[in-house]
Image (cartoon, rainbow, N blue to C red):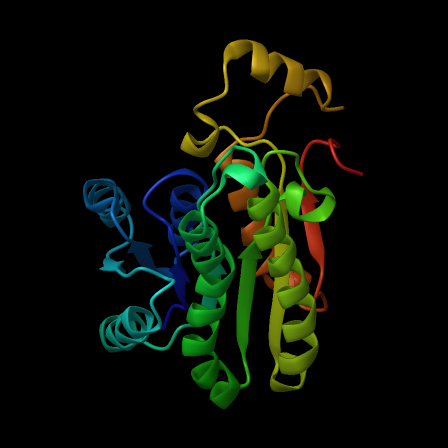
Length: 244
């Protein structure tokens, strides 16, 4: 029986590439989405061309009840979840003093609490079977902070701390918890950047290009593989050398 992976925020961008990467390797894939139903459906049909063991599941990861219902449905449809990729995230550029408390709470709720909600829901099964892989998608700004992205940086830094602490806690149960910290990636999240913005960013990247969602997907594929079976609690920076 193939392993089962849940990828949150998988309807587009990095999550979409991760879903495709894992599905191509024969893993059964649960595609989580919140509002992007059409995108999730498109991905479902694309994966079904080569892997029938896939389905889409709507849930707001910041809502613990919705998350619990989603996980129960996935377990009923596909089986116990072996791999969790906490990818769902939102961003907002602007001064910290201009951000409303509602915007702040929403960002922390999705980016950090959301990952905690989904992880808590899948852990009992992983602990029971003494096996599992959890990958949290953070950001280079979680490592060094970004002006005008203060709350986003804080939420992603929280994911790094969550990764390291949880890795220690669940390692005796045979569960590995790791974190990937992307740099500038060509996704909708960066669609507001102008061509001159991109050029300026590339000037600061030693490898002289921005990343692709597939760069992150390949890193996920390696971290969950047997090749990385002795690795847990790490932050794998995939940023072209922008933050070293």
